[in-house]
Image (tube, rainbow, N blue to C red):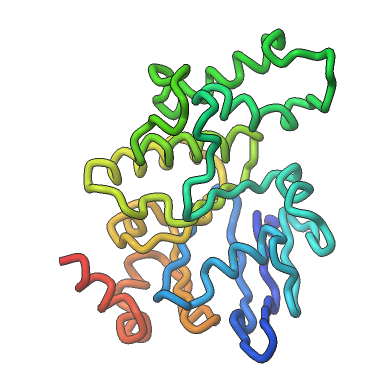
Amino acid sequence: MSVPALELSGLKKSFGKAEIIRGIDLDIGKAERHAIIGPNGAGKSTLFNLITARFAPTAGTVKLHGENLAGLEPFQINRKGLSRSFQITNIFPKMSVFENVRCALLWAQGYKYSFWNLVSRQRALTEGADAILEEINLSARRDIPAGMLSYAEQRALEIGITIAGGANVIMLDEPTAGMSNTETDYIMDLIMRVTEGKTLIMVEHDMGVVFGLADRISVLVYGEIIATDTPERVRADPKVQEAYLGAALEAEH
């Protein structure tokens, strides 16, 4: 039996007396595209923060490719092959598009702090950044300040930064939030391409995106997963329809 890319066992998180995550068991396979959905306040962002060590769990374990991540810092987890984006676009707006991607590549390619080692002279670094810009369709915007990109382009750049380190597990937090239909289609196509062969875990409210991308869906309600299955079975699950999905789909029409 193959080892899951990500394995959550008995995961809990409380803040004082408030129990936010109430005991989650979930295996996500290698190269699987997995969506986590649920109403506002269900604990989705808290769950992402537990997986990436921004929060320490109250109980339970998180394993990446079979390795327990307990005690590791977020940057250490990133270097083990897990990278995430955030709900709020997280880029350096005054730096060029190219410089944003190059910064993300520095540690991945073994560069460390040095006063005499100018990054502009590192051919492999430049070629790597340009290759990512090509992959995310931003080569034509290479030299402009990242803050001048459209909203969808900024999200694309953030996805480029997320994959720059060569992570094989990619976590995206509401990648299409606030987008028009055209922008959403652009980002969906981008996500499909750049996560090919990688494990994708995403939180997303747009059901069209969820059903268009996910191999499996987990439904999180009040800190508990009430269903994990294929999109078709989740859509038809009476518990899911009652707790969340019916209202979410109705809100889109």
